[in-house]
Length: 222
Image (cartoon, rainbow, N blue to C red; front, side, top):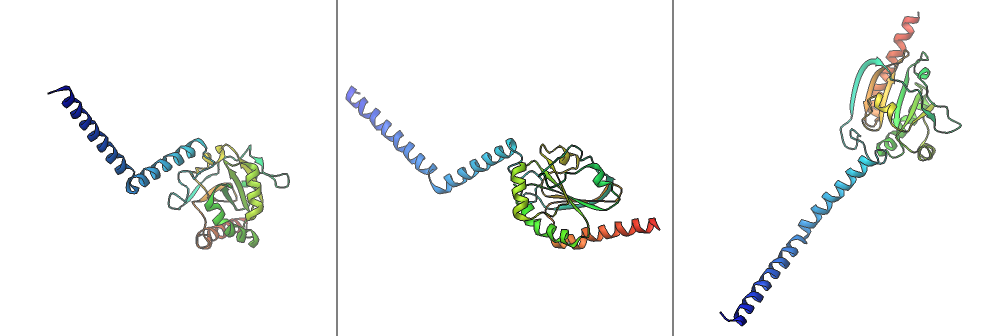
């Protein structure tokens, strides 16, 4: 085969490879291929951000990613000592607030928590009813953002403690937000609800337990 023929064959093979590469690129660029790839990349980026900045994305166990769960129990409430105040006009929480001879509700929330915003009207209604004091713990949040959030959506809390690093919440078994606990007169957790509180849950689960605990304590006092 002459040099000219060899050159022609080589050029033909190169053109064929280029055509195959172009066809392959066009196949990869089809929407049915590109859209799933971009979606997967976006999910991966979101997960990485959530790992690096746990206070800025839903936490595992958040009601946006897992079903709500409720549990009755009877165990001493973990410590809430060392929590700072959210604002100068709102007192912080201390362990003594959970052992003051009254039933209380402890609610973990954050300004970045979307379900917390959804359940806020339910907690506001509870606060206005004066049936049981609500104590708030601002979990892994920027205090300034939390203060603005409370001003915007309403403040049902008698006291608010700032759990900036999340250590207190971990001690309470908080895996995501919101998380709500019923604490009896002796500082024991009697009920835990992970996920947002609905009006139905408030009326059928939480308030009946609050009344039952109050009645039992009153009966013992007689």
